[in-house]
Length: 580
Image (tube, rainbow, N blue to C red; front, side, top):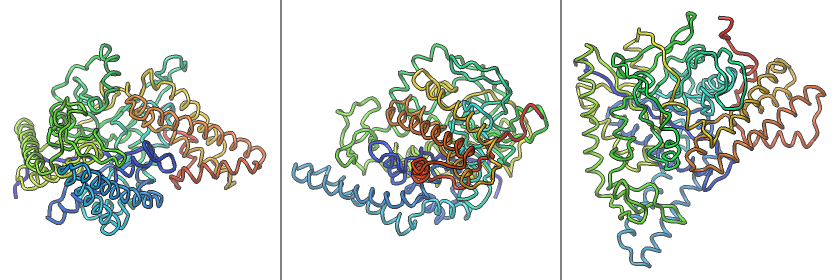
């Protein structure tokens, strides 16, 4: 068989904030339940089905460490069974209501929902043995996909205030991956594809005065932990306008972006750099191993992300926003891109198969043409990297997993396209060109404004002092042999990681769960302050009150994550830039 003209991989980024023990509905545990039912199980099914047909998916599957902790938790497994049972009951109650009202079309859809959730329950309990991580691990062991890690709690790395904070996020990400998947990760998904090179940094928030000091580039932390690659948006590589991936989904971001758009300036586009080529990235002047970077393809990305003419906006597909309460099931279709909720027409499941098959044909043809053009102009195979949030498929776009399966089948059968993972391609086509990258992300505008604006700037004023205090505590106490002191330090570390999650700033900006995000951030901040104070007092006296130990136990039980957390990660920076 001749070599394909090029290669393709879907990169799926799976992430949710830590919600176990932190609410259920409308914000909290049901986010995890919805993602598992609507995205993870359907996609895992797709990968298994493809494997049975002899088709290796070539999918690069990112699972953040904090999501892995939740999926492995016994609490999730028990609550998820109850969630599925509640959905089955909701479908049955809807059927009774529709029969009483003579809504014959909706009766059929409600019956479909009942069968759907009964099958999900069977799959979860019988086929998957209530172990979603185990299914993913076995798929990787069989060579069907590659799993990569991320920062521990999806901290927004360029804005974290200390290199020890970045170091701890990365090291915990590697440690959790090793524990869950039994091997070392090859790649790391930078939260929000956000990157910062090495330079003299000072906090970007107004009113925070601090002398600039040398910060390590994000890629340096990856290199030190034997991670081989990460993924960026195309504008970081080539310049030009950042496409953004969230604005079309959140009206609040549309309004917020309007305030910043006048200040936004595009970098001139550098045509000689290609998103279909892998590069090495380094911002360190010394001879440190550079890290490979894959680039998001903007052409295929728009076909899925665009709210106006992307595939998920097809009028025949199930609408995400209009739900029937109290059960929360959906019975309406998108209808039109700008249709309001009152204008949504009834959903017709029998209409959608022809649409996602036709769109799969279009997507596969687009991939083939991109790769043929690159091969013709560069004389070697390139790779189209298509990164998306996993939850887009199934949760936001109900038909998405079926569309993805059709795309992968077509590309598997295409002799001109090879399906591969990012790690496998890196071993096959080792890059040699070393480049530098600017600071930025895949958010609208290509920079940090979603995570740093007038709505959420206050959050960083709480995070930065906590990071400084953790560094001081760990530097002074992490070598102490007292096990109770180490337990206190570890819980401080866990709480700080939760405080640093980028989800809080994102939810505040999108207005989708602003109150919840603000309450969570303040709670983790208050927990950290008290735990840090208890740690100091215990270090001095080796005593704490019963009430203090009760508080510690409460935090430890509720936020029971990362058993392998190590306070030494915050004690000092490995390979500090000033000494290299």
